[in-house]
Length: 326
Ligand SMILES: [Zn+2]
Image (cartoon, rainbow, N blue to C red; front, top):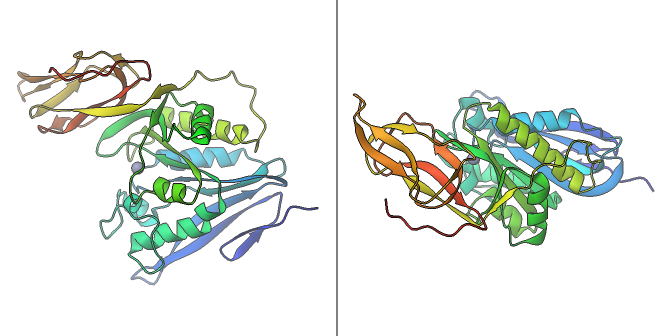
């Protein structure tokens, strides 16, 4: 028996085809309609229904390119199951290069939303109703915020078996156990029973090629692990380093920031990570690691204030927990 068509918004996608659909969100003051652009790849054969989205934060471009590249070589004739791709969830923020919505709300604190709520709540609700509710697995693509750059990493509930298996399949350099945050897409989707991987890589409002590359490979590997595509013939990737927890080292003074550590570098407790300097180059403070682990994020800001987060260190599953003596 032929596979049924896939329904989304006003359209039906026949098996073996892919289609674009624009789901109405709101109308601008100019009268122009604002829509959520979605692409559905409805495979000819049965398989799971999966979504991949990016730009819940409107200043995060890396994931948009990841999705473009993943879609570019999917063939619905040989694909098994259904992929719903939503490259730009925060449409209004993306147009303005803003993390938030025009009403200053964080879309990733507005899930599951409601049909009669704020603009953020309405977008969240539309995403939940038309996309998440139809899927068993989802991938939510992000970058660092506030001039922070992230090592490619998957954040998920590593205590959940399927989440862990898919994080391993993604094979980003790091997989980090992450608690759910209220109002996030991941949290609302978990409530509905979906398995969700959050991918973080690169910096906001930049197109970091290495972050795009790791994302494309990771999403493809997850689709293959779910049996939706055939695995590629490339070498198996190095295993993700498992990290149970992480924390930011904060600046203990105000100054120009010079960091000596790169993303992905292993550091020891007390190791010097960089320094803070005044405008004539006099050192104000050193920055030291407060724990052993891997650098998974770093500030790219030239100037930091006392208390600002400067280096994000993830403890590895085998490293002892350090205490701060710096
Ligand atoms: Zn984000």
